Image (spheres, rainbow, N blue to C red):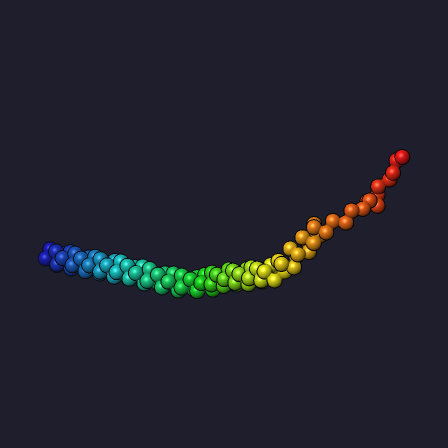
Length: 118
């Protein structure tokens, strides 16, 4: 009977060691899964930062070119306004004199389309 109880005792010890090994394996697996998850999150964050940086560069290029276009349009507009003001100042007196001469130099006469009905 002692050999049977000794055999049972050995089986129980073997079962306990197997159970301990299983628990240890589960803990290692959980630890590895947690580590893999942390690595994935870190990799995702790094990728996200890289893509965000690329997006900001592209956005600054596009927005920069748009602001450059806006500045160029403003600059052209100011140049055109200055040109028109200069042209106005240059020809204003000449045009006014021509207009006054046309208005004040009245030459009475019969219009070419007038028909006498008498």
